[in-house]
Length: 331
Image (cartoon, rainbow, N blue to C red; front, side):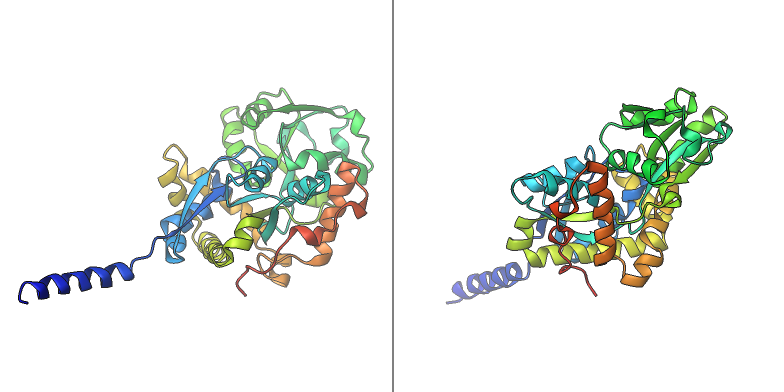
């Protein structure tokens, strides 16, 4: 019996210890682009332990545009991700079957699209772009909106030459004067300023919100499979995202440092400036009115109105309420 008791006690101790240890739930997170400053809050969440505190282990993957992110989440290559909600609207409108993806949290309640020019170009309005050349990313949610924004402002789109190219070439092309303007999100303005400064040029940013563009932009998305099979996991993930955003908005310098841990070649000052430029998109009169992350039915409908017009869809082609799920936001 003396031999049995230590063995029995050790088994009890081992069982007791193992019963308190739980494996973290794994989630694959699909970005829409490379990990730039606008994504700093995600890495802040990792480094500050917000995901870990929710019992989550996240793997973050780079992407090649909003459409790519929607596709990766829909196909099961990722559980959750980030994308312009317009890309999700277009995917759903064009698909014969329901796209198994939902937007679960609004990030940008103001549209991020903008026209970047050099100050010496004297381009101060969309009208000034007639007879000029604009470059845009090959894959971007902004591309389809461009002709509609022009039309809304009485501009003839055929009078503006468009070049589609890789996003990495846009800033050099603008700095070298090979194009008169580029189409980008305001969040990358700091990186453009740095490139133009090397050419002794200054950047001028013309947000499309100045020209009437309203509606939702960047959103957190989830697969329907995760929503159905692991709803509690998704709720914890969204809660961690909310904590990460709050932290990054309050401490952008630390958020920038967190991203650099994962991307050592990144410039902390540029990362911080990029995230700070996104704060007005995240925190504004709309998010204060409705609550950060929430989708207002009327603004969601207005967003679909812009998208449907840009793509030549009939408004009845999609009920935008079918692509969102509001059940996972913490009140």
